[in-house]
Image (cartoon, rainbow, N blue to C red; front, side):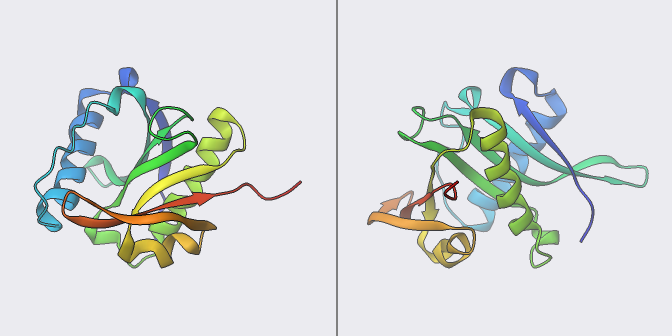
Length: 158
């Protein structure tokens, strides 16, 4: 697995290059690859902390390989939340997605304290999120033409 540098960046601190690259990656995966026409820029990016996993290539500068959007409690859900979880196609199957989820959970704890985290997972990915301690809550629902399931992660007991 290629080593990544992880950064947590508030929307107002994103460089134009970082913003372009994260929107491009989200569009590549969520719109083009998943063939899902939806409004990715949903008016919430300015409320999020953006988790960027970048790799440095010879002569290419930094390249975004993994990304997630982090929210404190009370913005998307009553709990803190993680969303727009994505890895570049070229690194899928390397374990980077598992590293990304670990970094996202640790980032929520570092930013806002150890607390429950809610996600809206595509239902076919619920086994993946279960590996990280997320548990299904509530019924499945249709979002942007894709079945979703809310899941919650609870911090380990002291």
